[in-house]
Length: 229
Ligand code: ADP
Ligand code: ADP
Image 1: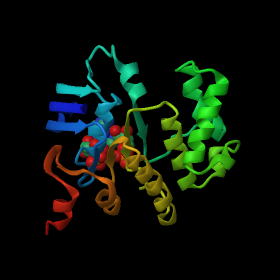
Image 2 (image 1 turned 45 degrees about the vertical axis):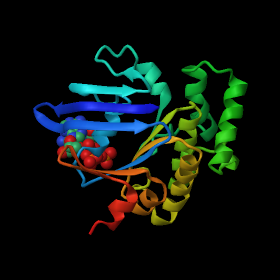
Image 3 (image 1 turned 120 degrees about the vertical axis):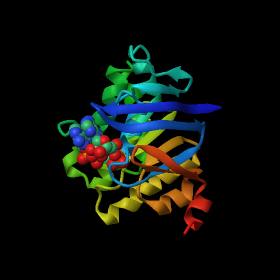
């Protein structure tokens, strides 16, 4: 069962060729870490998967749905693909609980009580239910990132994309976010993670993809990757 299939995908920013002939198949339940130097196109590649960026050539098929330029299926794809960013992107003027229930209530039209129950469930899962009525600014970076993960989970995604989720955090908060991601991985979530945390990669990734200058230049299982000199 295929979660994501990318075939001969190319993308330009103006005339800058940022992604070149990307081919990648992600099976359901697979956990892939995307590594590579800054500017190599990692972030752009995963942003193409939920259509935060548009590709210009080749195909991207997410859970059987082809991302086409007419944006016809964009809502369906977005609802199946959760994304966690480097900067947590929480709404500062909404409480943690409101951040988690906003999209379920207003986009999914889930009844308010049901949305709140689900949000509390996921806030417990990321171990911060007691923060539900606080505002993002009152939480540590690590807590805010766990809220961002919970907020994504409230939309019941089939695939989770992570774009350097720990690189804006103080070192002592990185572990709590990685632990949450490891737990998700153990539950079988399909995950594509851009990260420099190679310990995480070694612990959970089925494959490590290495990008350079807009291309996938190496693809390995973590065992081979970490034993390569
Ligand atoms: P990475 O995630 O590997 O650091 P990015 O995907 O963020 O790489 O960026 C790849 C390249 O594309 C970089 O050279 C970056 O400056 C450029 N880039 C990223 N976003 C844009 C944009 N919106 N417009 C033009 N160039 C961009
Ligand atoms: P990140 O750490 O998430 O990769 P960046 O600092 O690389 O963030 O980029 C921040 C934003 O600026 C992104 O939305 C990216 O697409 C955009 N960006 C990056 N490089 C360029 C560029 N050369 N021209 C225009 N936009 C860019």
